[in-house]
Image (cartoon, rainbow, N blue to C red; front, side, top):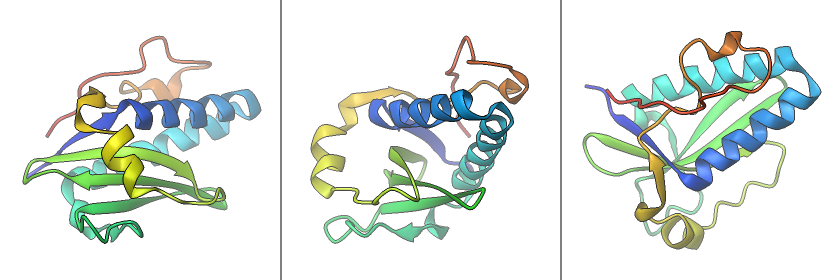
Length: 142
């Protein structure tokens, strides 16, 4: 069974910021990062419980961290397993940044009413795009 992966507005903004930064620095790296993120989200659709519990998960053991390997470091996505069918990505950070996902942030500022959509950041095949994708979002559900 596949889980539906949703993103909060904050998580989509995080991903766009990280992708835009790479686009300005190194176009091939941006395409590789896109593939790494897509592959990790595909794994999350199938096996969300295989990810480590978030450091801020004392109050909610269903808060998890997805490690997204990329280059010498990678990214960390904070997500919540909502129910038997839904996973919500709350925020994404670069691993080299101080990772402090605040529990208060995840439940107040990133509340469930703050969803962009059930979406994937980039449409299929966008790794072939040179420059910024025109349409960045499309539905992704299992």
